[in-house]
Length: 112
Image (cartoon, rainbow, N blue to C red):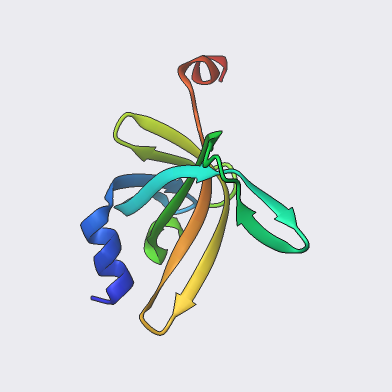
């Protein structure tokens, strides 16, 4: 097992992702997204460290999101998310997806 895969396995939780190939089960690390701003073409974190409401970042192995696209549902325990975007990151030590998720609240879920 590659180094990145081991880290995700050790630190992550069980996640289910809907996609074109059905529902896939895997491990992922999900955490709140932090606000950022651009200043002179450099991306920096705001000093307050506030989370962006309902936005989360997920790191997972490539097999979990390979058939998922914009709008796919992601499930982690009792939390539900919608996939906004995903980027594949490839290193010598392994490959993974970094994805942006939007959390679905109970009020929003009742509207659908």
